[in-house]
Image 1 (cartoon, rainbow, N blue to C red):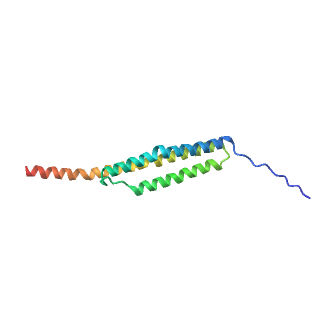
Image 2: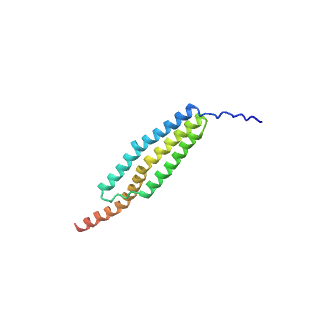
Image 3: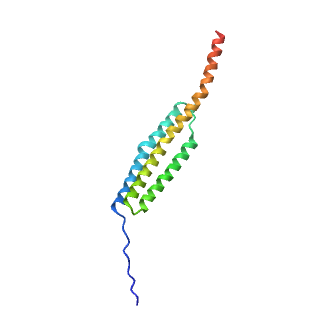
Amino acid sequence: MRSFSRTPTRRRPRAVWAAVVTGVVVCLLTVVGVMLPVLGLIAGADATTVGALDVPVGAIAASIVICSIVALGFLALAFVSRNGALSWVAAVAAVVATLIGSVWPLVATGMSSVGQVQDLIPFIQQLIERVGALG
């Protein structure tokens, strides 16, 4: 009868676990501490202007979904890796992707608002010319 020797499986180093746990916690804190307040600010501004503010909802939703998928991918890479350094790099990349996804809605809304103001300026100039022509 032949004896089969079992090779012990290699355990994940503590650095990998530390990177994964840190990455998940910091990503969750970023979502709660940055993304939710930014989305609340945008929603409040939209409600205050009674819909006059053109909020690019599609672009915001797409950016959040894409950045979330990228962050989850990096967290998965940090988890499956057996190299501590690679896990830390992947965890930091996940946090950066989460930060970008959290701040981008503010940038997209700001750029949209600037476009609206540029459309509003000629209207105001024409209105001033009409009032000036009457007086």
